[in-house]
Image 1: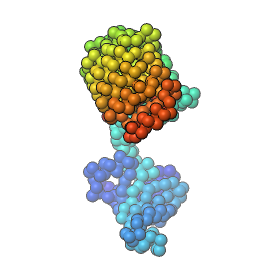
Image 2 (image 1 turned 45 degrees about the horizontal axis):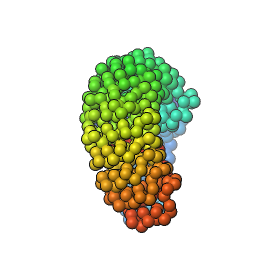
Image 3 (image 1 turned 60 degrees about the vertical axis):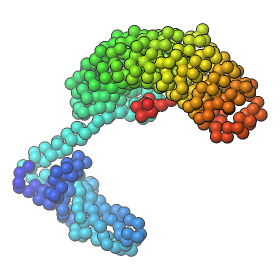
Image 4 (image 1 turned 180 degrees about the horizontal axis):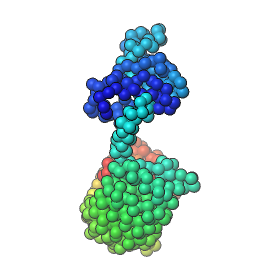
Length: 484
């Protein structure tokens, strides 16, 4: 801007406010000035209070301080639009004297940039440049963006709301404006097409997290565009998307830094796509493939030791697939609840073969056919196990419970709800072992009498017995890094 003073008027009605650039606080030019501009504010030493309507807001300090701080809202005297604030400390005790409303009582004034316009026509271009720079700073500072229809805010019911019709043009405008985004959630934006993702290449290269949950019109081509435009992507969520192994292979070839991948309910995914992902992305840490019925698990054979989290609930896993899942040796969380294979009896012994020695949380809920042989192998081979969900595992008998009591020295939480073959002898084995146990989830165990339960409480008064049945265990998807 020029050295000559610039006089400002109300940006709404043009009423002269007698604000001049010479009265701006110049001592804070630098980092403090930049912070103020980022907030859309300019500070002044003095203003002509006759040009404003004043509304006092008094904030009291503790009585022992004997002071109050006045904050006066400044409104345009003509149209009443909010222009800014005046700040000052008055020496009176709060509640006894009213603050001085003269200009001298204020230490400084903060004025909103958007509430001003230059009085002189020749100054408007330079002022417009200041506003433009302010908006540009705002745009450059934004790192994350999540639409109201995203499930993280209002849940899946938002699919019926009108805010879901974000289209290609909207996405273009957003990406063009916020070119430094690192997190973008389009979850629930069911009208987004493959073509919209082409704008990621010129504008989305800094994205690290992309959520496309329930974007039903996104296909393999759209996922290939994501790979081309977001080479530094570390997290992607494709829950219920209509992608196949082709799209997954394109993503794995382009985004080598991927760490978290959510493929839950992607019905067209198979072991071929998982193989491309596990072999191409060697920093992979977490994979969700729950309800992917075409997955047997063998696609994860030879996975990296960085893989610590696998959610494969309701998958058609095979014994060889289980062996492949734990082959990396770094697994800490495994969910294979509701294992679909009906003849899957001793196939879980692979978990205890030494490759899952770091396992801390294991969910076998509703694995009804798992036998004592598998339980014994896991109890011996997973010494770091801290939580184990065995609810509705009906084939676990005394030998299995005894092995848990004898070998699971770090177990803190155990779920045994509705286990038909948990008897008095099995409960006694748990009571005499599992010295670190703090919570036992237990309900509707037909062979356990009230007397046996009270005896357990007597001997292990430090163990909390909860009747609730927990459906899912382990860390939340959003906090995997912190929990592992």
